[in-house]
Length: 392
Ligand SMILES: *Cc1c(COP(=O)(O)O)cnc(C)c1O
Figure 1 (spheres, rainbow, N blue to C red):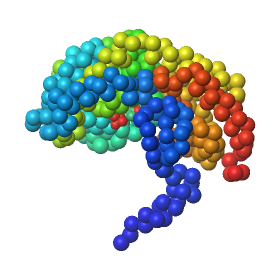
Figure 2: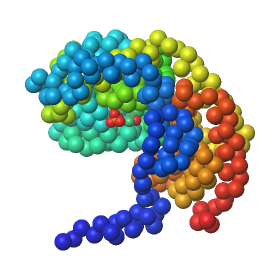
Figure 3: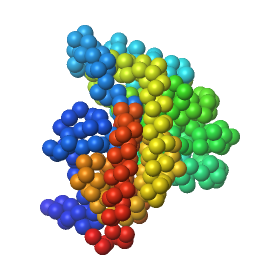
């Protein structure tokens, strides 16, 4: 017996990296109950406030009445039902791509797409700050795996020179821990010039970005030739769950044949697809949520800069406050919590060592008054926070 789990856990604690799950005792939203405490929260990814929207809930209920609650089988057996198919068509329309394929989670969509497209003898090039699911997918694929400098098309171009076989370049559209936008036009240019393919995971872009919520690809006006493989997830701004890959007919047919995380899993509940169809409709047609969100983002950045907080280069709902030391980040998060504010501290290994931060996320469900409360709390707590690491 050699699993010394107690020692591993103790080491984790000693490094200030021990993780615990806050228990949410209310629906998702700005005002929540967590571990028995009522809190104003700035940490969910429900960017448009659709996770608890009455019309989306009603669509879910009606869907369950008509289709039951379980998918019942995998898509290739007998689990691909009417709502799944209708949702795929609506997602193809949103993305302006010929087709879209529904996955059960974003993690699985990424594993499925990358492993279906490249293998031994091929190359995967990824941004070093990509989401963990993309990095895992690259490693699992068996292709030569290399990371380029963050959002750096020149660094990518150098690695493309040495790439062999089919080459897939993979990037987040909006980086999940920094909130900055990938320079997709430059990445697409380099990638196309070498005959490689660009895959964009726009989990945080769909909804908040683009004139109709079509994400970073809509924001930049990029075509299918620029971005042949486009991934979106439904658990963030869509407020539901699941994910999709959008692209050409050949791409989607290939995923149906070869993407193991698509093939060997039960389809999501059809009622969930009914709910997502409703949230997709709200996401596309009701622009006020995006506009309100932009107002809050400007308000937050202006206020945070006045306090002297170090923000990152982001105009998205992800507005991290850079702290550096993990212990300090955790203490600041705890001080805020004592004032009734919940903002998560993000620590290594989720972010690089020495770059612990508070990850503030804003949503269209927040009010300007709530953002003001956050700014006031930050001003007080930041002042009281000990300046150097290790002086707690
Ligand atoms: C959240 C996220 C995922 C995973 O999506 P799930 O549906 O939650 O599994 C994938 N990529 C990025 C960039 C994400 O932020």
